[in-house]
Length: 538
Image (cartoon, rainbow, N blue to C red; front, side, top):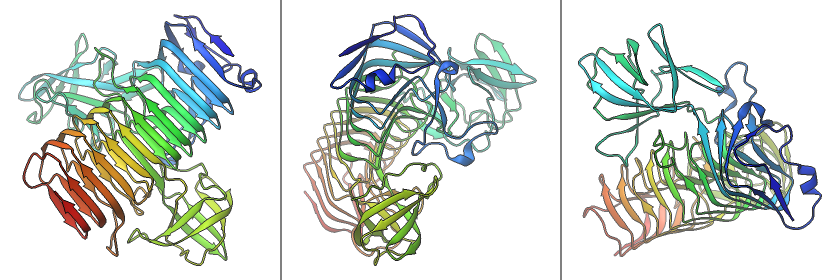
């Protein structure tokens, strides 16, 4: 069955998302097909949903008057099976802050052939036109709406008005792209830190007065934005078999794609990047992709990623802290304030008891009951809690997906390319890492900061090209406080090409079984290890 929705070049102002009841009642495969064209969406007219999205804004970060976790959502799917949403190569232009698409409790969903843009987003480019001894002239990007009042610069849009130098003292996350290195972006302090006053020069130009201007260079482009991660581009929750194909997202107010507690995810021929000729060179406030507490297989193939405010891809679970133990009943808690409000710990799952200092297992058991007590705590009944210790953490071994990340290109990534912490089989092949400010690939694991689990057990990094890494291109760094044995195992680094990087190319800690073979390195000093065993470098 095929549904045709909308006509092109009309503003979308819907009370109901899309006749959900009719679709739910239709058995078998279904297609929603859009006519080609441009659709304008007003965030004020979108349905509001309560979305608890991992690795986004924490409760304490919401402003007065905001309802925590309330999101405007133009496209919302819930409880639907066997559905294809075909955008027909249409362009959707959204005015206002939203989560572009949310998919919850669904099965066999394909989203394809669409482009999503935002008008007047809360990300602003300040390009240095001229540097004087005590002033700097900036050009603002053409999408930025602004006013200067009493010597202060304000940005405004559909649902925000903010002083441009708000929190400039603490804003260390600002993106900077220099004229000489247009493919590289790094985090710097706010460009208006220490500003004395602002003058409006007209035509999108302002003059900022400083006591010292030595940190500015002509052609520098600074990107100023709200770092709170309040929304997401595409949010997929508790969904089985989700496919994203030929989707272009040009800007996201947080992460471009978040998948949590899902099974089998395919991301194919997707482009998270500014459109050609865009007013910006960053496409996401935070990571492009977060895959959290998922299962089955994750495939990311033939995609292009350009301009992320954090990692390109993070695949991880959660370390839940054991806060109480009574017999075989455990209370476990989300520990990072930006992740909570959902329960991915399923009956029948195997969980491991992990020491927070060594990151090693003390034992395993199976969940027989799982119940959320509140947004942060979950009560578990397990088969055997003998090895559980209050203060230790648990890792859900069943929620550790395989990953195939192949034939992708990424550039202007402000932190790491890939951050991997999963026990599943990981294959990273034939990718082009044009520029990452930090490591190209990080194999992490921690239980005292972000609480992102867990240990890696089978990773192959093969036939990739790393043009530039601001940090160690391949960093194997579990955050164990004490070495009592290998955290990661079975890492193969084969046939890769490494261009420019500082220091050592491959660093590894607390790892057993590293094979480095047939790679091309930028320097002779390519390997450094600490507490590693069975290391072969050829």
